[in-house]
Length: 193
Image 1 (cartoon, rainbow, N blue to C red):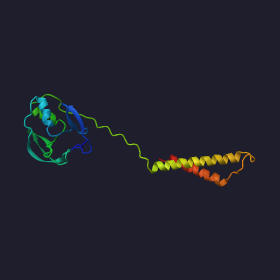
Image 2 (tube, one colour; image 1 turned 180 degrees about the horizontal axis):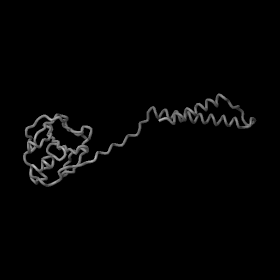
Image 3 (tube, rainbow, N blue to C red; image 1 turned 30 degrees about the vertical axis):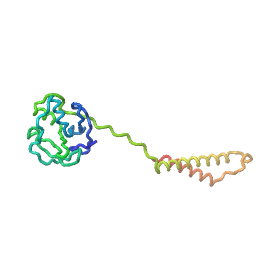
Image 4 (cartoon, rainbow, N blue to C red; image 1 turned 90 degrees about the vertical axis):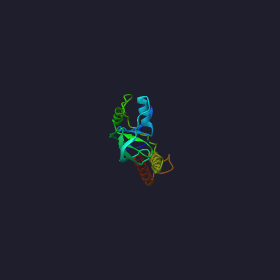
């Protein structure tokens, strides 16, 4: 995809809307980019015979750069000195602002086919799944810490509530505190984004 020479932030959308010729149309300003020979081919289809001369009249330097090759374009009359369009002298492409295609066809005496094109912006590419990086490693460590803390708390509660003759260990305040810290830290780590 190439950027619109007028809007710069818009990507041109390729469409076969005019005579099955793949044109690049801006969804923002509705301008049309014709690669070399495409405008002539479209006009020939409309007329049924080759189009008249599409030489530039009084070309001057344009403020726009070619969307295809990036070189500075020329601005001059197409068919009529008053119909100013932009053309790349390097790659031969032509940029028509909205409604200029209709004017070109009127000046050439053509009546067939559509004179403007509207397109929707291209759908955004789906986002790639997040790569596993340090964030997923932290989450894994937090999960292990929470499970270890829960296991430690469960063991301490088992020792505390069991009859003393049924268990061989006694509950430990230090192990209980450590288990609470592991569980709380792990739960906190899992809750962060």
